[in-house]
Image 1 (tube, rainbow, N blue to C red):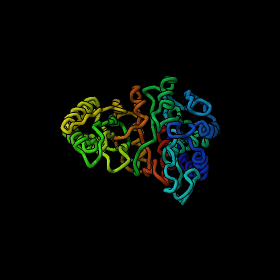
Image 2 (image 1 turned 120 degrees about the horizontal axis):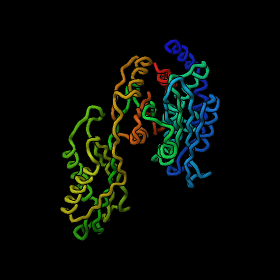
Image 3 (image 1 turned 180 degrees about the horizontal axis):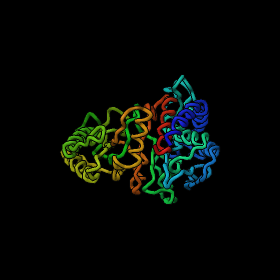
Image 4 (image 1 turned 90 degrees about the vertical axis):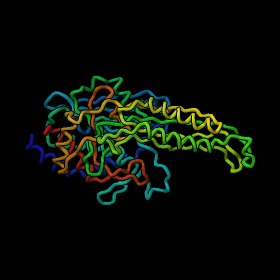
Length: 411
């Protein structure tokens, strides 16, 4: 199969114009979930299916998730499989949905019209997650165009709802079609990475979002003794909780960057609308990303104790609620076949050594891992996801396609 490698890579280099065309079609069809004010991914799935059918897949699976909140009543999930010479499948999973454009005035062009400036293309979704979708697609197209069979079968999966929890995306697919996957498969999720293509994500921290509701007594600001100021209480609680959490959870793991657990106060809801009133209620949140060795319930206990103590000292009350709690699954082994295959491919394409790493964010790879399916998250990204003027490099798409092709070849 080594003889096919230069043939495949040369073919991939010829796809720039087609890559731009595919990206332009995807960008022009926003797939925004209903929780973010959109109508879902159905229209974009038709575009993706049209392009998949051009490759004449040996198997094309549609596993739509019922959702009455979108027109048509369903959210699409597509899986196309191309038969290889051996047993097992290399799966590459990308997502169809995007986040909203946000403040349009911050964009230098229409977010839903592709703009190209040399090697860089702009538009909502071009990186997150069109880059993974398009690069995995054109890697497979090179095999079809050159009439080369991959070492294992190749599966391309395009799912919905990644940006808002995956209930109608991968979680639905794993529930309805578990027969598609085997622990011997190689599963790649091209939805995180770094600029050098050297980060292979194999583990995630647990995610815990805590909501603190502080209650006191509203009064006029000129007579504070008649009330209980919840803004002052919130300030005390934030400080005490922050210190308590960082004192209790001190472990470090070099696999992750940053290597420690992070516990950050983030969002604060509005309280009284006027300056001259002491607020009687205040609400704020902590975002905690916890090393897998810790149980999120332990974090809740420490946060609760610190919050109650600080609130009591000022005569206020506080309710602590976990509004999101995701325990990290068992990590993918750094020696898993999918990790080793990606390391070999990155060495060949980028001439750099990739290494397994952990991240604080959450990816859909966690759902595979919870099912005992080793998955690796990898791509070469500029880290422009969710930002105004989201962009990616065509050269990165080509390079990622070559990495996928190297894995498909089983070199």
